[in-house]
Image (cartoon, rainbow, N blue to C red):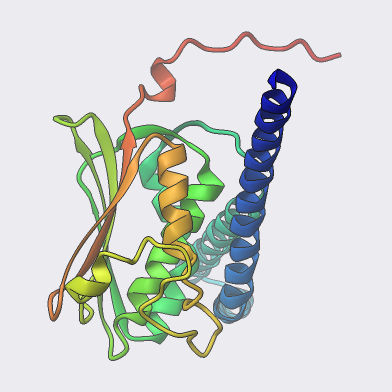
Length: 268
């Protein structure tokens, strides 16, 4: 009898490990799908940046006065910094982080995603507003959390077919001991009967858009799994005609600057 119980326990442990692995693989697959969708917008943005660099480089070559050349150099520098910000965000987002977590400021975590979706939002006539009330720190897997944010932003964009406003906010809730990230849209809202089911696997309130995003019914289910694995939770507030707000709540940790530094490793 004991052997049967042991084998059953081992099988359950094996299945739980397989389920965890499959969830991580699904998250990574969704992430790569998002990278493909963003590629067109980002390529267009890089073309704009290159045009700026080329035009101001030509202007600097043609004009010999210091003021014009300084202006050209400033514009080229700004364009280069913009390109660097985009590539840094893309590399951070696309990188496979496994299941590793580390203390992180939630504001740059959000900004790295927003820089990738900025042009896509503009394309659909959606105004982006950021509200950073504070800079809370949490122990997170940045890749997983950024994927959750990307899903929420895509959902918000799809909910505003005729344009609107997307607000990304970060705040500290000292009463509950959480750092919070919220994504709010001005779309049509979610009916109460559907709101109760949105975190169920394969339940969706929409179909795939023209870019193949949304409609699988897995995004919010995975988002809940990610938040629970972080010891946090995801909350939704919505009303028909008033838009929807998703809030991610993370247990607060001390900023990295106040943590005991790790001893430096000797190289060579």
